[in-house]
Image 1 (cartoon, helix red, strand yellow):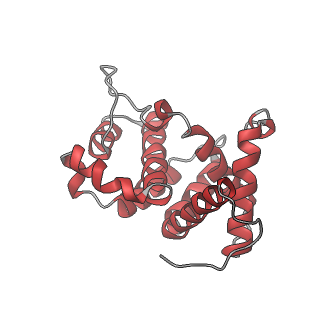
Image 2: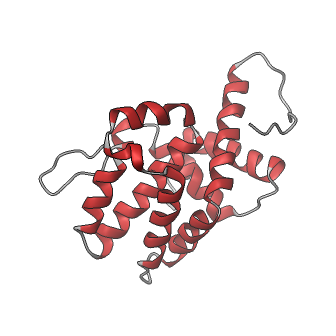
Length: 180
């Protein structure tokens, strides 16, 4: 983790929400996983980061199907990075903005046939197997994300609800867990 990033107010905001939701509402105490999720939320504040994968010709890839094809054309670290990004991309959309999935799929003809949860789990798993001495800890987190994709997606939905509640006039404090 980038220690400079952890000092940024946006990171602290997302880290606090992530810790609150996962610890209090879901009973998940996993600091490396929660830190990864907070960092992902910070990265994805910028739309350029959401769509940062490019093909070898430099064209921005906006569909998971295109990203998968690009991952298959790569080897080693670039392949791992694309699969990690596919996991992040699918987790972000299924967790933070699930209502946008129908629009994304309508716009992206090939993605209509992709199950974002299954593909996110698969991509995180593949990325976790492309292990080196330098990325071993992150690979452990990616493996947990693969295993607990649905739980993390649900937790991200809870984080969105919490930040929206904080923007409203609702009083602070825990709310009952509502399953949607």
